[in-house]
Image (tube, rainbow, N blue to C red; front, side, top):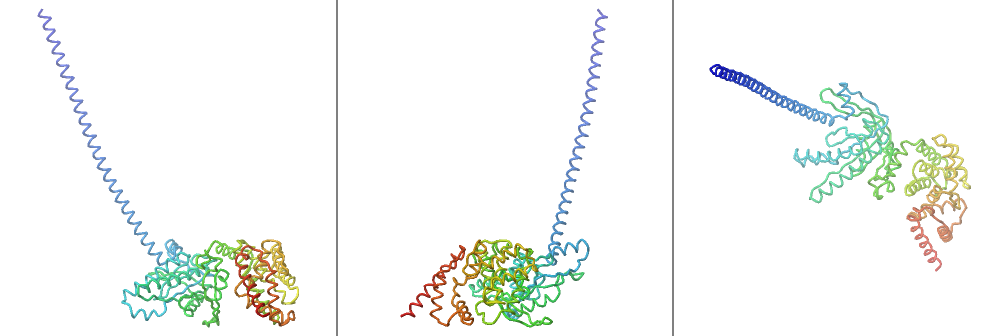
Amino acid sequence: MISIAFISNALWVDLALLAVVIIGLYLLYRSRIIRIQKQKDLLESQVKQRTIEIIKQKEQVEKQKRMLEQEKAKTEKLLLNILPREMADELKNKGKAKARKYRSSTVMFTDFEGFTKWAEQYKPEDLVAELDSYFIRFDEIVNKYNVEKIKTIGDAYMAAGGVPIRNKSNAIDTTLAALEIQRAMKEIKAQKEEQGLKGWNLRIGLHSGALIAGVVGIKRFAYDIWGDTVNVAAHMESSGQVGMVNISETTYEAISEFFVTEYRGKVKAKNKGEIDMYFVHSVKAELSENEDGITPNDAFWHYVNLKLYSNINYKNAEKYIVKRLAGDLPQGLHYHGIHHTKDVCEAVERLAIWEGVKGEELYLLKTAALYHDAGFIHSYESNEPIGANLAEEMLPNFGYTEEQIKQVIDLIGATKMPQNPKNHLEQIMCDSDLDYLGRQDFYPIAETLRQELVEFGKLEDNPMQWVEMNIGFLSGHKYFTSSSQKRRQPEKEKRIEELKNKLAAADK
């Protein structure tokens, strides 16, 4: 019995020791786990703290980067206020900008009338603010038309089209900008007058030609232009009138097909002799939205692209035949003179645009108008074939193809009386040749025809007989195109009634 009890007690001791060992191991394990967890928590805390620091550093770096970009943008914007982008980029990349020569550009000068007098009436800060308000408006307008502002000199503002990026449309772009600036001046003046204030008046001058453009200086950069073109443009401004856009002959030649112009006469320019000057009044009605003479329409830009990129050198063809007509037409052509050719050219251009003619067909019509009466150089009778022969002989020199020349010859032939056009272009040509029949200037033009017929022995000098002939001719005449029927037929019918009344009054 003692032995069994002893064994039982020993077993319990062993079990107790085992339990102690197990508990010890568990506590050791637990302690290790806790220590590891603490190390893990500490590590995570350190990682988190480090991450926060890195994020803060990154944010700081990004903030500094943004600040640098903002400063860079400010610097670039400031640089672009001084230099064109192309020049600024070249200057940044190469440390210098090369001067460039431009064969064709258009310079615009503006100047306020009586600025010295205005300056005496303003406080300095008010004067600068007023001047600044005008120049800001000018800046907006020239940017709209891709014209580069060059600089201001006191109250003078200078800009140029075709620099620093070359383009063929610089004279047209600069003219549009000049016209809009003058309209803006009128709007500002009207607003000021409503407030009981006086608005300023502006002269604008334009000239097209070659110049040199580049960046000068090493401390304060300045983009500038030099050359005779700049001097002549300044002369056009000083020779102009307030509220008007005054242009030189070279600018006129580049833009006259698209704008309403007025010849002013000649002005002397240093080292240039006498220069022809013109006022530009507006965009041609048929080339503007709603015929308002202000906003160019799609036909305007189509016509511009045709002029700039066509293989046909219409301008030189025009110069040639106008020179021939001016020098070789016989005396006594009161009606069929060069003025009639120019009138038909304007009419055919206007009517073609109304009729939606596009592409080089427009130039073919204008060319036919130029040559349709050229035969009068050699003969008063059957002049159309002679004009056609002149066209066939000369037009190859100006880029016209054989097919185009044939079309021109057919168009000239269509004007022979009695008119019998065979297609749309010939209808336009016929209506343009007798466009004046339905215009308000019918009587003075008809009188030139009467004088011519009398001088060449084709008509007796009998006023009433002439009235009867006009009634018969107008009554038998027909306009072929819908545009002429709409725009000219009503006026023609008025002329018929007026002539009939005149004849009836004479018979009483």
